[in-house]
Amino acid sequence: MQSDEIRKRFLAFFEKRGHKIIPSASLVPENGPSVLFNTAGMQPLVPYLMGQKHPSGNRLVNVQKCVRTQDIDEVGDNTHDTFFEMMGNWSLGDYFKEDAIKWSFEFLTSKEEGLGLDKNRLYVTVFEGDENSPKDTEAFEIWKNFVSEDRIYFMSAKSNWWSVGDNGPCGPDTEMFYDVTEKGLGDLTKEQYMEADNKQQVVEIWNDVFMQYLKKDGKIVGRLPTQNVDTGSGLERVVMAVQGKDNIFDTDLFTPIMGKISEFTTSSNDRAKRIVADHIRTSVFIMADGVIPSGSGRGYILRRLLRRAIRFSDVLGFKPGSLFWLAE
Image (cartoon, rainbow, N blue to C red; front, top):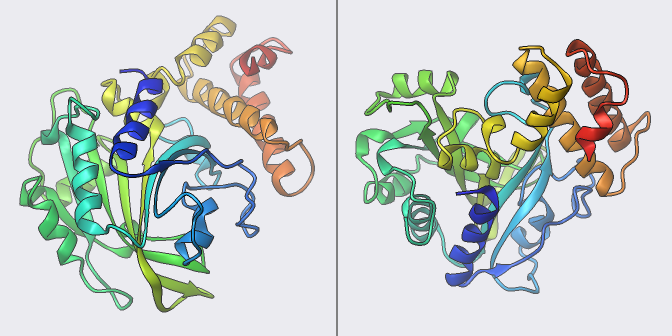
């Protein structure tokens, strides 16, 4: 299954369940002046998650363009990139944990309507609780209807709590991870699962955020007027799982640009190739949304990406001007 079909299946699956398809917002935020780029699908929807009525209703779905550079030094491994597409569905005060979890599982595993992934390669995490919010036993009990109890792990806020920043909606989440090893890892203890995660043997492919709380100046000050669901699923990692790859750069999203890079170099430095591919790809999308290189703000992020692409193309021995062909 190619990436374009995965996008279409995702939108169709949730449209059938009452969601209105909305377009991707620009990478340049309108509703999030505190950030340089939209870093998640929910960011353009913050006013609606805070209680404002959305003109398309209370069930929405889209595939949002995103840029994140906080993990830029990780680019070149199996799963990190700076530009990605976030498949997302939202409930604005409508359904909550039960439907969100059920539909997440159905889309990932259904051969008819979804992706047909192997449920025996799925692992799930839920929030273990802290001073801000209690242990999410409700999500745990719902998940037991779909996966084995010993594949559900309670994790800390570091991994299973979502907020857009120091101000705005936030809440516990449940994440789905997929085993991308060749033979499969089988049942894992929590410690074995965490080790597999660190080794990128299991990869996060889905996240259901249950937005219940409001944060101001880094502290939770109360509950939101309505309970919302924010689903985020990184397309690149989902494609990797569906296409049976162990890294995003071997998927159809990257193979054209990776193939062109191989025409320009005989180097075996895969990390450098991946960095060049990612940074040129991200730069093209940023410029398409109206940003130009400069010495500050968004323009500096773009300038930094281009500078790093040039640096690593030099490492690979590219001839001057070669990056033009990658942009095309």
